[in-house]
Length: 324
Image (cartoon, rainbow, N blue to C red):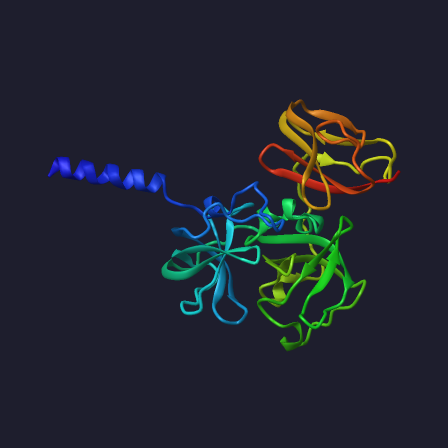
């Protein structure tokens, strides 16, 4: 009996260590032929456990699921009509990884609700620009995110889609969970309307990423904060000059020694040049980009994006324009 008990424990530990996560399904840096980023596990049957972040998507029980710790690459859309779990449920999903016109999802599912009333991971703080360029936005597909201080730039179209901008770039908001004109009182979206915060699950449809608020409570007119000690974080500044020709300077500040990457992308989300990829000390830093790619060839005029990552927690993306 003792040997059998030890053998059973070893098998349990090994199987737990190698359990598939949502991150395993989603993480990729390889763009597909259509510019989207398909899962490396397409057509595989998987079993994952996670926390439900959004319920009754499209009003027919589909839902969004995240690994318990949350974070980029840790969310996925579950295409299932029957079970109908609720936000905060911990569920085990066995299904097939599929790509539906660029949206990674789990289909043909068997779902087991393990527990209810669990804490939902906090939304990931992103900019509106982060949800525009596929190479930047793909990591948030299926995740719960929030954008702060946004202004409406386009009212709802016939598909319930509208657009917002926090000053970094315009992104879409959609009505996957509820219709604005069916709540009481109805929510009317107007150009130049300001929202202090919008929270929602990110989907991908018709070549655009979109935030889908789950209830009217995810549309917050004003954000109130209690006076408190503000945690010091890195800061990525606007490049100068902008627009520019032939070069521009990018400045950033580090509040602690950090591993830093600073990467330039084109509008297709392709990496143009990596300006920084190293450990750097605390303090102010500046980097000059002279409008060339990694092979030192001059790039054409147009819009480019530069994205900075510092440590495990800070990410920021900004837009610049090269004119010749």
